[in-house]
Image 1 (tube, rainbow over the protein chains, first blue to last red):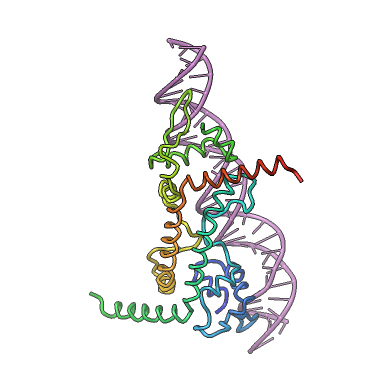
Image 2 (cartoon, each protein chain N blue to C red):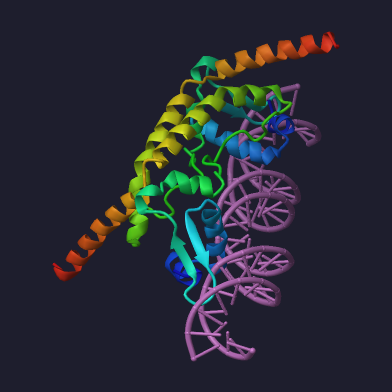
Length: 127
Length: 127
DNA sequence: CGATTCGTAACTATTATTATTACATGAAAA
DNA sequence: TTTTCATGTAATAATAATAGTTACGAATCG
């Protein structure tokens, strides 16, 4: 698919698509080609790409809305709060990332296929 | 303490302090008084207030940076992704909230006290 | 060559959060 | 009772993070 097509699907801008996909390309999840017949292609089988791979490819963005405002604050109260919550956040993050590793594109594709079949059945048998 | 004093400690604005503390007051964690001698006071013993109480008092703000962009999207792909990740996010959130419930103000106060003692010792014995 | 498509820098727009101003209300002290 | 101090709150402004846009260069294919 081209960036323009993806942007239309995602209801966003082609440049935003390219920026995001660039991360996936650098991680070897997709390839891109220029010119006629160019666009984006999956580089691996569906069952060999997990949500965790994508999370990593996107630069492991912060998962939590909150978290230490500073890593090494001078404020002793802030230090105490950081220390008390650090483990909890780290554990929750580790758990979430592990779960991301259990979901592959194949998982999503299978679920999509099921939903799509249901969708068509509902359309053909209204009421 | 007054909002002005707290704002100085937190390096923010008194009105921001009032807005935030208002949530804690509504939850019964603190009381506020106007006029001379007014300001904010803890309403409960230190070991009876957990980080979870505060989280709840502040309106249970979203913990995760990411999450379902839409709750009930028409897009079948989005539906499949939401379905695959919902459980993981819910579990991680539950775990994190449970951990918040284990940390009390007394926990933080004790750790602060220890850090403060260390801090003073370091000042009195330089090099 | 010409149409197409990605690559990328620079810029703009949007949104959410935080900060500020202004003034009303209430409480204690002089 | 008047003055001073403090919260309560609405309205507005500033800031920062994210997303979107424009513009143009580079590569590819027919």
